[in-house]
Amino acid sequence: MTRTYRAHKRVGATVATVASAVLLAAAVPAQAAGAPGGGYAGMGSCPLSSPALTDPTDLQVGCVVSVTRAGSFTIGTTTVPLTSPITLRFGVYWDKSAPQVTFPDGSSANQYATVAPAGAPLLDAQPAQITIPGIVNFLPGLTSVFAKVEPAGPITDFTPLAAGESYPVFRLPIKLHLFNAFFGDHCYLGSDSTPIVLRPTTGTTAPPPPAKPMTGDPGTIAVTPDPNGFNAVVASFAGASLVDNTFAVPGATGCGLGGSLDWIIDLAMGLPAGAGQGSVSFRQTDTSLALDADLADLTGALGASAGH
Image 1 (cartoon, rainbow, N blue to C red):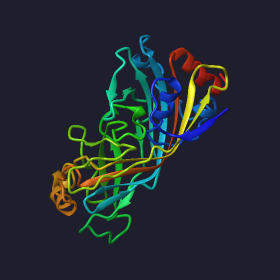
Image 2 (spheres, helix red, strand yellow):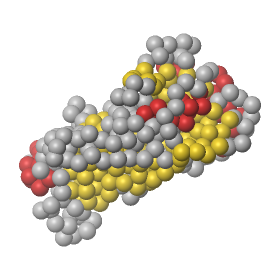
Image 3 (cartoon, helix red, strand yellow):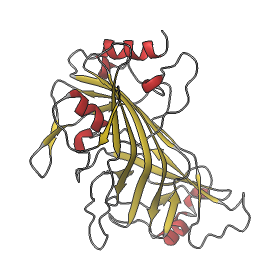
Image 4 (cartoon, helix red, strand yellow):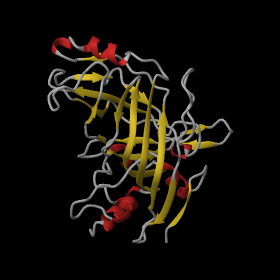
């Protein structure tokens, strides 16, 4: 039996942990025959055999699949529309040190570590066409400018019980890949060494002035016990909105022959840009997550859902 309710702060119970952990954003992609199904659909790349998840001292382990269907990424006067799904896949674990964070109201919550998926990208997104001030798209297909969100490192500081709190749900370093016929293949805003670090929240941001705070929405959660008798709990999160306008954006690199176009992009977009001069909004987000206190039980639940 499935229960649906609005997200709010919960502490302690496994069901509460699962419900809040769904706050990343997502929809579940179609699965091939033999892959996990039902509430576990999309979790075929969960890193169940990774050293971190197979550590017997872990207190909890889980799998997450998340897709954002709408939103935008704004840098100065330039906006990158998020019109195609952005998919996140990863494993989570809460180790024996039981890390926690404390919110301003005095309550505390578990903070989870993550593991990259097996045989699939951590972040999967399609390029979006954008308009950069001063760069005219006079020949579509040749002078069009596209931007693609790419990961610049692992997700860290995953704090699922930050649902509705004015506290980041996770920390995600990214880079924006800009390309057209003249930019070349290595034109980026941000890099692995100097990333754009997103700390999205479902609560309210606190950017430096004159930027105005943004407010997200934790959405609606449904929690369902495993249908095959395992102890895993499956949760889905629908309609979430995660926002951030506290990050900085470095100048362009690698654009044009020998970086000869870097300065043009920097001038047109006002880069480098300090914290509060850009914003990101991940909207229409749905997530599926499975959480268990025992890896063998979780593995059995995923296998049973695939008919194994």
